Image (cartoon, rainbow, N blue to C red; front, top):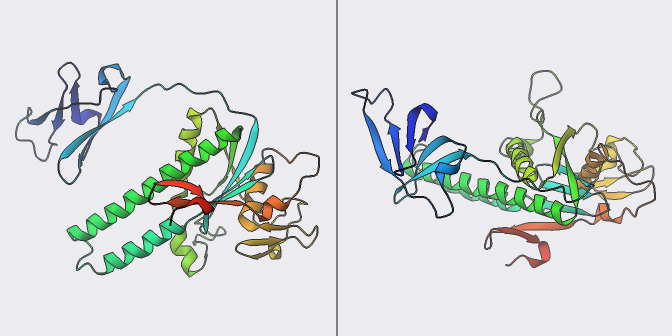
Length: 306
C-alpha cells in the first residue's frame, strides 16, 4: 500500500508516522493508523529534504514501512571521454560496443528460463487470481526487477572501468508500433511474446540514474537502420543480416555479430570511429557475460559456476 503526501504525516522527533485509512474507511475526521518506526543507523529522516511517499509492504512475516525520500547526492566526475554504444534486443538483452574496439553481450537466458518455469507453475494453478498465482507472479516480477537493477549497475560499472563518459543507447520507445498504420509490428510468434515482456524503457531509466551518479551521460538516439548498416563501411542492405545473430557485409566483407554491429552503429551516431583503421575482429568475437543465479551477479561466461 502506498501513501502519498496527503495520506501521511511524519514526526521525525518521536519516530512516528500517521497513516490515513482513506476516505472510504474513515468514520471520523481524526481516524488514522499511528505507527512507530525504526530506521537503520545510517539513516536519519530528519535530515532529508522531503519524504515523498510511505509504502507499507508485507514481507510474508511482518509489515515493513518503506520511506521514499528526496535527497541530494554527490555526482562524480565523468570517468573519461570515451563512448559506448548499447543495443537492446529480445535475444541478447544488451550488446555493448566500446570506442577502443571491444564488445560485450548479455544474453537473456536466465529471464527466459524464469518465464518458462513460472508459466508452467501458473498453468497448474486452479485460478489465475488465486493466492498461489499471485505469489508466483510477485516472485517472477521480483526476479526480473533484480535482474534489471543488477545488469544496469554492472553496465555502468563496466563503463567506469573502461573510462567511458557517454553511453549511447538506442531509443526503443516506438519498437512495439508498426509502420504508421496503427498496428503493432510483427516480430514473429516468439519475438512478439518476448518483446512485450521486456521492459526496455524501464531498464534505460535505471541506466540513466545510475550513470548520473557516476558522472556518465546517457544519450538516446534513433535506431533507424542500425541493424541493416555495416558499422565499418556504412553499406545499408537488409540482406546483410544473414540471420538473427550474424551480419555479413557483401561490400567490405566484414563478418560481425549482428547485435554488436548494431551497438557500434548506435555509438557512432554520437562519436564517429577514429580515422585510423581498427581491426574488426572484435565485432565477431564479443565477450559474453551471463547472470549467475548463485551469486546474483554477472560474470564472464567461462567463470559462471555450474
